[in-house]
Length: 294
Image 1 (tube, one colour):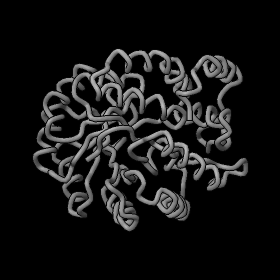
Image 2: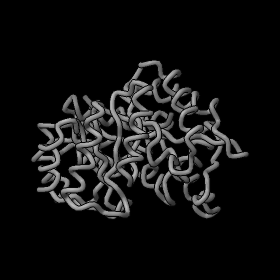
Image 3: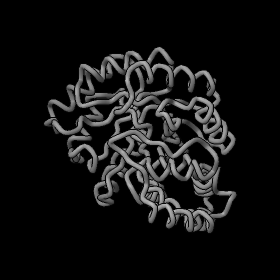
């Protein structure tokens, strides 16, 4: 259901801080032209936490209309409140997404019974769920045994976006679950490692800038040409790392501005990338093959 390259879209802003719908459409067109399999709207990379309800509705209306079912769409709806996540998910379903991305509740760190009850309630809405596991941001690392219980209790969970950097845990989960659900990489810099243990694709922030690179890697891997996949990854790797020089999506947006797709504008509490880091990113960008960029 969720195989291949999914780009976690940024939300372009004007210098005045408003949503830049023209830049959003440009970015969507470049992503589709690069051959991505889907787009994620209102994820972490979209700075969703800084957007009000009217802005979210306007973005979803514009983006889904422009995408027009040409690729799959996943909408982020998760929060650390079950009631608010239910409200967000109900609103998202009016746009007929292929799935909803629901992060494990952050900060309040639910125990296993609460976590299962949280997803059970959301599953009642009927949408395919992509569980988002990102311990570094949420403070909650879901043990293998708890994830197993969760997947058994909530069959509406069709995929996991895994952003854990513990490759031992990732391997345990991939070996255990990748034949039952779509197990998606959430760490751009480990994409090939994830593919090697059976992951079915990626939800990527760096793909905003480097969608052609990720598509080439994935297609080469699927054809069994692992040498070609590694060659593309090696060429792309410095810029992939550069995308995370400062907190995502600050560097991704800076790179997009260098590629004439929107402004580098982010919303507080995120701030502008430092001058020193911009210089480093510029140097890496100049040495990145143009056919790997949007």
